[in-house]
Image (cartoon, rainbow, N blue to C red; front, top):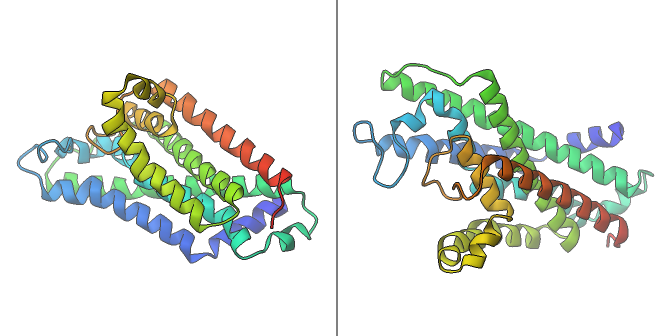
Length: 273
């Protein structure tokens, strides 16, 4: 198992696309969480309806600012990461080469999930580091105090972010195994995260009560509720207090387990060709 994990970590670390996803996640988080709101600041309040005042860019709000993008665009990048880790084996037709080395399909699948979890952890740590720097810069420019969250709050925020991003990446793994490809799983995953999910929340849910109830059991709204419970600014796409933070964490964790188990079952049962 350890040999397979090391092999997967080395393989993914040498792929430029993986590092590009990390860079894009950091750039988008800083741009939409700090640069644009800072430019649009008028006194101590943000642009109307933005929910992004000066207070949301200061060090004591770093947890919420980091988690704000997880339900949508950072989650979409995590899904792409999960697809690449597994789907590339189909695209490059390397499954036979991997399995010819005698690891079982279950072992390879578990190693890939561990690799995905390691990658999302690195991503969350990078996001927290970048938002901490951005918060410090804003506080210095605006002559605001450097009041940082406590260590327990940071650990809870990082754990929640890791849970959400790993869940989206596990969905990418499932789509890649199910469709045995790269392009189609990425396309379907992005359509769901960036279009269907938002349409259900903004269009269908206010009009249909049953859709509103179904939303409470879906991964995206629960990820958004978890981010909102930990301080993500209101008005951020995908962030909303549709359920409590505890339920959001439980539902996201449940989806993570289901995605991992189903993808492993499919990989074991189906032809790799």
